[in-house]
Length: 212
Image (cartoon, rainbow, N blue to C red; front, top):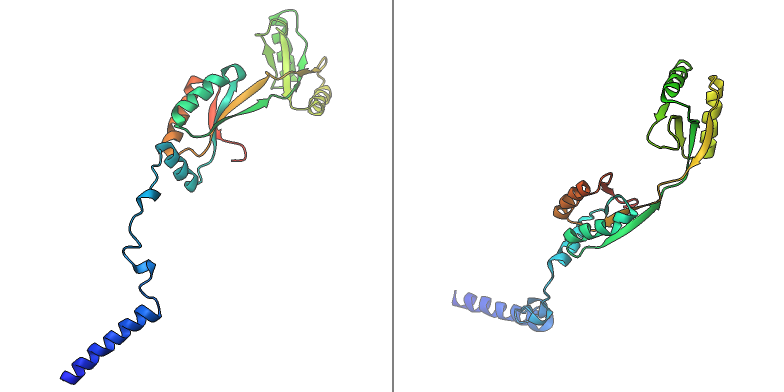
């Protein structure tokens, strides 16, 4: 038994020596001294940077607030920047294209315009409306607004086939530049607060940015 005991001890010593000196088993990866924390490599991360990193890893899409009038763009950007905490805020401008209006020119009185609308309904035109707000076009009858001149012309031809007389078309200029304020890589808590901003900008909404 004693011989067997010493043989096992000798075998373990030989095995350890082989692993240590021949195979390099006790390398840096298993050396506790080599694995100690290196203070010079520690970096303090600001909360906003941490939010950006976390958001980007989750693949959060870009969101935007708008449209808002160009005159309100600075106020909207300031509002978004106030809750963004250092996240990227930018603007997207969109000029409203000219549209084409099909209409019947202003009639002398509102009563005359209402009689004409009743006549249009008998001719199968149910989507006409009376213009009463604009002083220049008061008592004109709108028969549709279209994105292209060709579409407006097709509408006029359709009205003629129904027996409608006097329908005309004219370009309607857009209302000018509209602005969308965009926020990228926003974490969920910021996105929730972002949605609340639309209440301060009538007509604006919050949605995903075009193209993400």
